[in-house]
Amino acid sequence: MIARVTGEKLTVQDGKLTWKLPDNRVIDDLLRFIDEGDAGDAYNFSPPKEDVVVQADLINDVQVESSPLYQRLILRHRMRVAPHLKEDRTRDRGVKLIELRTTATFYEHLPGVHFRTTFENTAKDHRLRAHLRTGINTDRVTVDSPFNLLERPAHLTDEITIPSMRRNMEAVSNTHPMQTLAAVRTGTSSLALLVRGLPEYEAIPEADQITMALTLVRAVGWLSRDDLRTRTALVAPMIETPEAQCLREFTAEYSLVNTTPGDKAELIRTAAEFNAPLQAYQYATIPERRSRSYLSIVSDQAVGADSDGAGAIMTSLKPPEKGNGWIVRLFNPLDKAVEVYVTPFKRPERAYLITMAEELLSALEPDANGRIGVVINPHEILTMRIVFETQENAIIS
Image 1 (tube, rainbow, N blue to C red):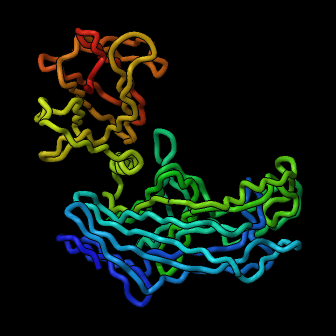
Image 2: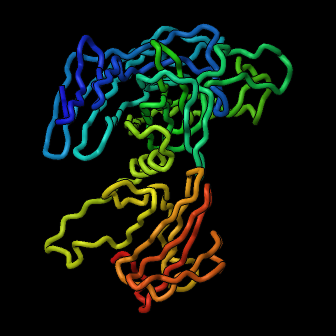
Image 3: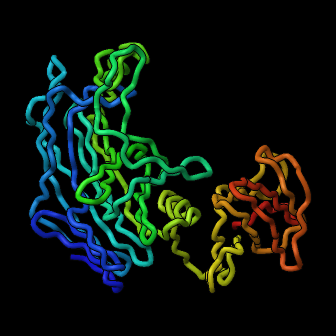
């Protein structure tokens, strides 16, 4: 068992991982690994006509690691799967061994459970997914898209075949793309699945809750085929792609995190921080600048003593394509305007509102403390250029 002072716990009992959350909700059987045959191609998953679905067994050898920075469970799962599809595109019972090593970690000052799963894919023609229960029963899933969030139905249909055999048709699919997050919520609770480089999920209603099935690997041997159960036509040349069988070692990083229901900016920021965590460096001597941020962003959405730029997401801090200064890009995912104040570590000489192509729109006037105030309209992307008196070109040194 591992635990936090808030009462949050991760335990293993009877071969199942259980998560007790800070609000005393309990999610049983939190993590499972499910493997199934894949008779599809590089474009579409297609289940074999005769399949053998396998769930990995949790080995009774759970280890615990701890340090001042984290507490961690080390889990080992094992499964035997079919080596490949037969000539008739059906699946045999398994003879290939897949062993998965997963760490489930509580980090100090970071919410949620952070998973890292490593395994070697030894089989062909299959799809391996991590099934993560959420403890939340809903009919909508929130996922991210460029500069926004969108909602999808949690489940569309139980059908896996195409009712009509008309040409150039695809079956309705419950599997969807995402970039960095997929979240479910009610009026009082919200849970987000955060991922790094794992762009496919399916929301599965079961046991009065939504289970997020996260694709870890799809191993297929064809660019396109004309005999799929989920599509009635070729979409590319029928070419074999042996490298797409992905016979190599994989490492998957994903996390389940509690977030504030309905706070779009918090959800996007949490996923961005998971995908691009801060880098820590050890200095031989104490840096001169210790008490002030190199760049601070504060908004009128902050609560109490919170100085975070709530409601505004910074997506870029970079040198301009031409000339001096720095480019700062922000966007507002909310349905209301947000007033934002950007303060560099020293007062800029000039500041400009520019387009995403870095073309001048208007001048911005920093105040006596170097603070630049702007209003970002709902769903607006705002870009500014900050220029300093010297040619150091450095907000960050």
